Image (tube, rainbow, N blue to C red; front, side, top):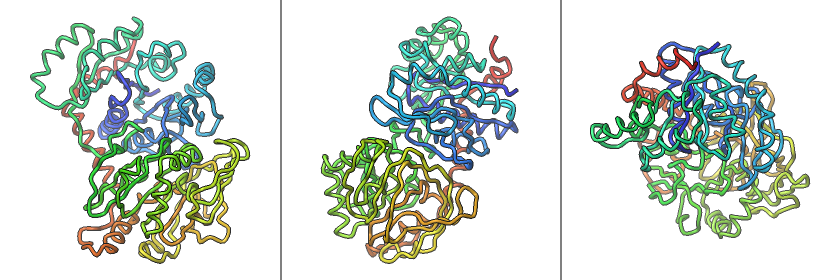
Length: 503
């Protein structure tokens, strides 16, 4: 069975996911078969495996760092919030149902056999498992039913590294407070702490390190600098999606929906010189973009109502009438249609008029479509004509079926989940486009061609715009992450902790 180590944090967004990815890369570089594991993830960013199962995207990123194919075994439970008090519960990659917070709190202990079956399977196939916790292990109101922090550490007999974020201040209080709120047997599981996101002179910090070691009796094994690596973020706390960014030569505005999902679909545009990717959530922030993107969402009808109420819907329609490219992905595509029907109350129930920019209708269904796809764009006229016959790959993940009628499909899917089956996807009407495919911009030349087309439309020089290998870029970033952690963390201590395990 594999050796294990667990990464927990003093709070959400302390850097657990990134640190876990970095360790996965280091262990891979050192010749070990390594896999990430997170028993329960709450996120709106998800990924579809080759088998058609849904898992947290953070674990897919960590699998990439480890050099292995993402597997639903790495994240057996995924919670996708549908409201402030409820979430869709996904177990072993398939939808179990929607539950409110209280209902799930009472239910989740029943999922321990699923968690341990996935963990044990991974453990038999690898040398090292890097387990990631969630939030903080010191949530004293939740500890009785914990299955993702110290509860998981006990089940896996995993030594723990506690990661603390110094960037937002109070790092020593957060470490000390976390440790002091744990039970004695839980404290003994913590074998080291890591100060994360540090800016400054470590020598100035050192007296504090010595003091916190004395107070907790736990060694500080590393001080990791604030890393400038381009690796996908976990969710809504991401710095990528802050508003207020400045427009560049080409300005792409992504509407920051309240339940936005898979915002990582658009990261590739940030790599193109002269292109700005801005997230906007008000009419005042929209300005005059060259392209507007409506992203995916876990609550299409609810977020469409939000667009309507805050005035962004009318602004988007005004821009579309003026010729601005409007591109909807998944839930954003559904919003662009004429009407949304929800007969089974998958979301809100009833029917709701869409934005009317595409001549399509969507009916929500209880069964979720989950599959990886490859295909090509159909013949496109107008500004984005150079996309004609350009290849793409990605994945579908949605609970609606969209009837395109006689509308012109945007793409032709040539391979579904590795099988040679063909179908049409999406819709295009002039400068308004919609597709169900997450990741449609990532591979090949898609994003570069869009940027080139938008530059040409403005009469600007396209020199410097070239196809981007997003995959190669990510590989370089994983190596940079690993190098940074090696320089700032005592990896000999990490290996010793793994070898010694827990008593």
